[in-house]
Length: 323
Ligand code: ATP
Ligand code: FE2
Image (cartoon, rainbow, N blue to C red; front, top):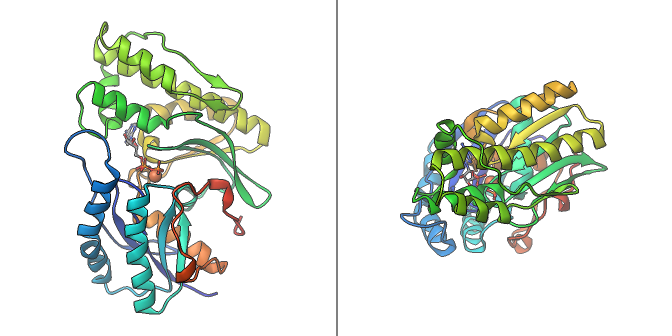
């Protein structure tokens, strides 16, 4: 179908965000992030936050005056109470404006916004966020997961360690800043099993190291170690698939040291490294709206009666007809 714009809403975890996006650009956007006062993300409190602010952010994008041909929402994966709050708003909007409803996989949206923003075509994707650490590549109609974490996502690992140091959530960016001051590498467990990774042992060792060494050195070592694991698996996926582009996405992708390490690896192999602008790394409404636009073009819409959320929606469950 011919379509020009989609309104998308993201709300799988901390970010509550809406945007109206067309093929050429983001036409309107509004966000109201949930920031826990203490500790990590509490699912019920995040959902309550989303319920409190969703009408406000939707009103803001509607006030831009741009029309839209569909309403897209983050259907999963994510925190159940948050997903349900956002889905309810999306259904109401689709019914009120008499436009199709589009359920978007949050992980696929991280990939598609990166392809859109950077112009890369068929990359190996390193998708690194709070809950997820996956190395993904397109093959036979779907984004296949070539390797992933066997326990916690790299972002959650960084955030947990940050809380251990007394830093406010999210810890990732604060650890990046501390790591810049670090000088000495403290050996930490490096766990790559085939194409998969594990971070829990490294986290325990880092907490232990923080009792003996300066926190700057531990943050530095943690980043070097954790990111080297990710780069190793990404390189192996490049070699295996024969592709020559690497795209980074997800909140942790904003980390400049990780980007630098990937860029070096790509140069050494004759591949090209792609990173979108900073605002497209963390969860955002534009990535849901843009992926909704692609899905609408290929008639991937859902009736309201069959629009239940899926907290464990996998990247490789989605058919990708546009690649
Ligand atoms: P997903 O459902 O995709 O797992 P998410 O809810 O974790 O998404 P994102 O915005 O994709 O949300 O990622 C958030 C994570 O990114 C947090 O763990 C945060 O600490 C981490 N992060 C953000 N900026 C940086 C940075 N500069 N360095 C390292 N980590 C970062
Ligand atoms: Fe995300």
